[in-house]
Length: 281
Image 1 (spheres, one colour):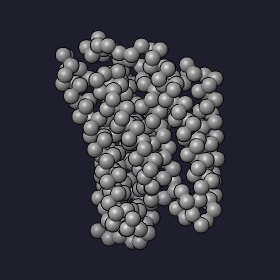
Image 2 (image 1 turned 90 degrees about the vertical axis):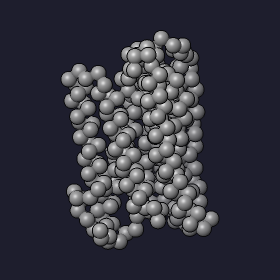
Image 3 (image 1 turned 45 degrees about the horizontal axis):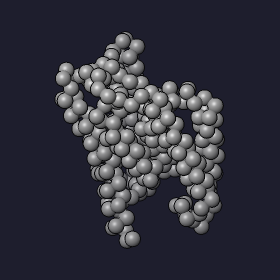
């Protein structure tokens, strides 16, 4: 594959994530319009229990795969992308509680037992494949950026920490199954967005270093601050009793990450990673 094909594949992968996010948004809007009372549920995740289910699960799994496959500008950003991608699968496989806020709650839905059984099956498959993938990345040199060099200290640490976290995940899954199914979605969603914010922060730092600009005066730092303020503002709204605080937080963070991803795509449209050289303009 020549350089142009590699670049086009990279850009297509990035553009696909924007399209998948848009597809989920359109599906939710269509569900809201179709509801008799033009009602919004309290979170995006709650639309799992509606006609949006297949798009919700499919889009999250596809986005998760894209985040894992995509190679970041620096190792820290790449690990955060992988981490967020894994959490996207957990969010898709372990549904949140049923939301009775709208008339769509009166429609047919899977039983709690069916949902728990599906979540258990899907999450166990995810944990097994995730462990296999980490071990493959550790043992197979051709999966590394430089196959001729052994894993560096950061990579070895990342592999060790990841294996440790997966072991903890297996332990909780087998020893506290009900706890995992009951709270797994919320924990994974919080960690997913934390990873996304970390991606933006790492990218802002890398942009400042490679383009010789101030960390506090570049486009990506602005997005990191905006995302942090969105989280803080939504927490305040939640504590004040705002019914749609979670939905607002999710919508803002997803929208802001889409803007960040679009800006980064425009910056890197002619290359796969950011070059380490000063940039003016």
